Length: 281
Picture (cartoon, rainbow, N blue to C red):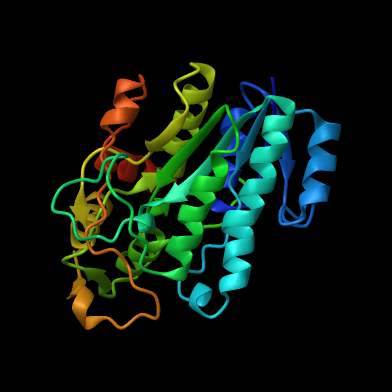
């Protein structure tokens, strides 16, 4: 099986390339290698590569910057997805696209399911929702919503809120964390493994929430990381209402993984994922 991976040097893309490389022939594309906002170029390259699966890990993820650069966000997170989905349809290939918890408004009091009403509150969020709609152009497709990605794969960057919290805790300083913003983190290695399980098992097409099991506020992550590291849990607790950001974030953004579990994909808890992340160095 041949798999084309777009965004192969990103945080998630690098993990997907590494994991799928052990089970399939992977053709990896960086941003420099293929401009996925160029529809004719995408069609030509995919016709040449002839992949059985197309996995899109690329995207415009600068949430605040998107407020000032909406065209760039829409091109990368929506129009590019349309090009890739159509290329997949032309080749009868499976298409995998990653979306975000930001498509919800964050006003729920229980984990969001795939059937819940979306209500994006920022340019970034709207661009991701449009991308989900365009991904549906692929008859054999999966949209996997992830959030709060953490973890690092070979050739991938080390970034994200968990990375920052751990780095600050190790330095002995106080890590600034939300005490009232709820999340379900996604360990990139677990997302990569779940991606392959869905594709390999030929699970029903559609949207799946692909996050680690359990929900927490960011302060919980800080305390758990400090305990695992054996350091003092020095945390500066802040509330969402007290932090002024250009783009609105959903305050409650836990995602239910019941649909993913029903498809036979079992995600480890976020605590288990955090332990493996810290052990990896």
